[in-house]
Image (cartoon, rainbow, N blue to C red; front, side, top):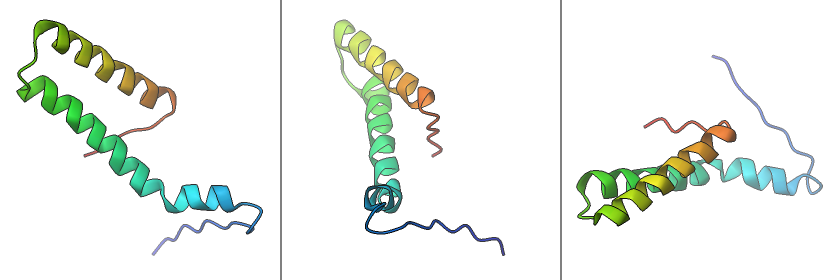
Length: 74
């Protein structure tokens, strides 16, 4: 079985260590935002203006994710 090991020199690399440890929390938060946009656009009772704004915000959200090479797989 293959293994991946991340190694950090503590305390010097504590920020990077905490980021790696909390990565799944960040992913979950991004996933929740994506689902919020999806549900608002698909099921929300939005006015035309609110729909357009929500759609624009969703598109910008995904653009930022793409620029940072973040892929949300559900």
